Image (cartoon, rainbow, N blue to C red):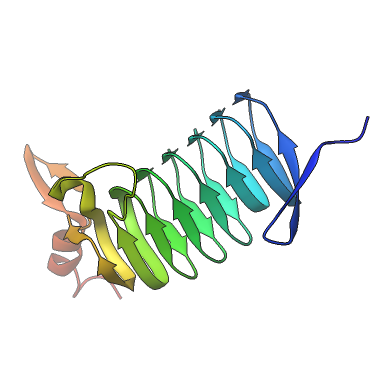
Length: 184
């Protein structure tokens, strides 16, 4: 039986109706269209990704070209998008995120790592409800690249690992600075 396909923006997508995928979803040469909300337990690697519902990924996500998600997106690990990204609701990324072109998100963006966007960033461009100021936030540990064109940037700062010595906590950078004359 031949897989159902759909042409979107001139690209032929393979249609998936799964709502839960156990394990990895690795199809690096495939344009993938999820016609439902979908939860992927582990990692994702595809050429194009379009989702008609929400997308939840338990590991990392890599999309060679572009990604469009109609509702919200939650990625537990890191994210790498080769071109642009468009998310209808909110977006939460559990690690670093790299998007080589621009980003448009209907509500807030929350990245628990470095956020590196090649071009422009828009958060809070929701056309289906009235939003408050928090829903326009772009919360990241550090913005490495990209221009915020709409939304409020909040950089939380990179948290350093702390090392405990005799009941006192020191950051790795403090210890390196103190020992720099001994370390070559």
